[in-house]
Image (cartoon, one colour):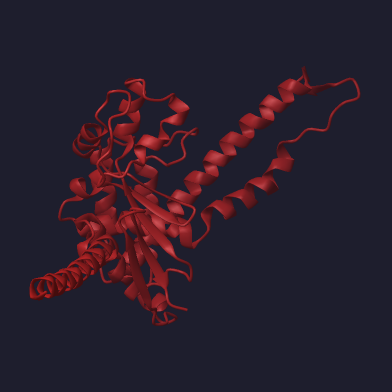
Length: 312
């Protein structure tokens, strides 16, 4: 009887200990996957830079997500290895570099991601309230977190100032200038040459595409300036983003001249525009209207995101 009671007590004790250990394990796992203290060092770099920028700049009143991906080298190699068709390879660029992936079509995706970290350089874009950077971007910048701040400020500008919406409105207003009224005989005279409606449509699409590229380049110049403004307001030296631009051009082998069919201006145009802006920018005037700004952070290892949330 005594033996049975002891056994029963031991089972109860073990059950309690097991339950405590299980709860502790669950809590530890949740804390590891959602705490900013245990996120990868690249995310910690983003938080450190954005915290400093937000102290002296208003970053809007909506959540901004940051995400780190494997990069374009993976996308490029995935196409070469026959893992996808060119138009479908974007998926591989955004692979989570902190996650172990299963082989796909007998190709080791983890090895591809490692190679991208080594060979890919600086890469960032903003879309739908998300600032995305390749993991290799942090390797390339190294301890130059001030340069990292410039590229983050640039991408933040695209989101905060709604560049996509502004471009769409300008394009919509311009499209009516491209359109040509249809003739009764389905033909028109352009430069003393008769053209049909198909040719007119093709010409219209060409003009539209070139104007879209022009608007994109315009927004890139604006984002360069806004990014530099944020960094200067935050206390970085005035020439930080000029030096960052030179560093970016060298590391990414960017062209010096501007192509009409390019979404980004060439280095010379970007450099001159940014230099002129910095020379005329008055920080004191800007900071007179600045109001204190508060925010908090949320990290998700599962979603591979770090979220900046303004407090309203």
